Length: 97
Image 1 (cartoon, rainbow, N blue to C red):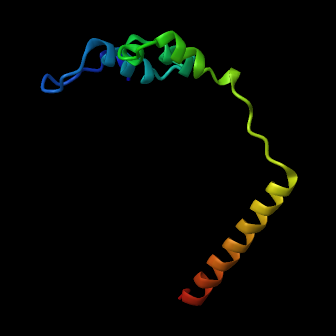
Image 2 (image 1 turned 90 degrees about the horizontal axis):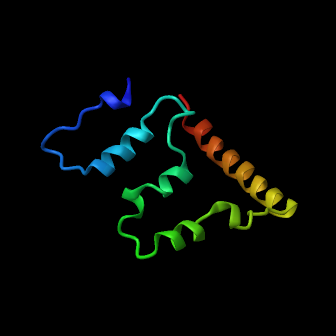
Image 3 (image 1 turned 180 degrees about the horizontal axis):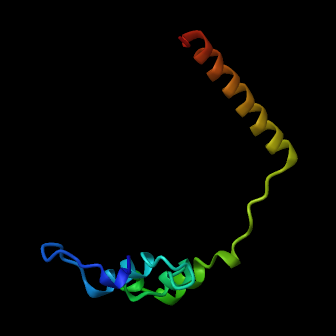
C-alpha cells in the first residue's frame, strides 16, 4: 500500500498535520519512514508546547545516561525468572491432561 493513497473518512475530523504524521508513520519503506527524531520536530507534535525547542532538547536520548545493570542484578533477575517458570510449569504438569 502506498501511504499517500490512504484516504481519511469525511466523518473523521483530522487536521492536515495529523494526517501527515500518520502518512509518514505508515510508509513501508524504512528509509523513507519518519523516525523518532523527525517526528519530534513535526508541527503536529510541537504545536501546543509552550517551548518546543526546550522540549526537543530536553528529550534528546543522546543526552540521557544509559541504564546500567550489575552482574548481581542480572543474576538475581535470572534466578527469579527460573523459579517463576519452574513454579508455573509445575502447575501446568499438575493440570495436564
